[in-house]
Length: 268
Image (cartoon, rainbow, N blue to C red; front, side):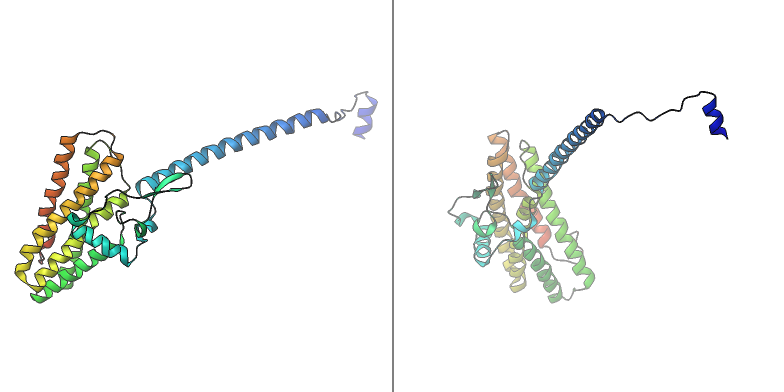
């Protein structure tokens, strides 16, 4: 009934306009361009962000698997370099190779000067075991004492890492991957194992082996840090560098004496 009345009053009905194919095409093309532009812009932002994150991770932490590419030949020769650094007649620079269009360092299995984490971790574990044996021979062994020695070793490792990082930072902002510094600092326990073993075999041997291992570790770290500085330091001050490198060598003596003091009280 209402539709008939509307038709009789002369009110025209509103009809749907005909579709405009050109408008739809322009609208679809515009939205496609917008989506494509935003997608390309987003991919560029995400790509640059991921590249930035990856570059910083590789710069400061590197690949952990790199530090475990070792064999028996490398371990023997590396221990010789650590314990007898003045007998090392070769160069101290690391060997590079092109990888993915840029230079990268060869892994330890191919380069005796490359840092690794296998020797530091094995030496740290051996140090804790030998320290426990030393306590047992004196009748002072207990699980709590062994736990404290484990913590003492970790604290000593951390102090060595902090010393090397602060030295590099103070010498003009030279940067090295963190795991490189951790590996260099961990070589301390190779000498500590030798000193503690000498103390177990003959108590007086400790007073011979301890200064020897301190001296060798100081020479090794000075040679290594000098290579890192010459490769990556931004400014060079000969006298300042020499004094700080000498400080690294001298700092090994109190650190080694503290770690070598195997007792129930880990602070002393």
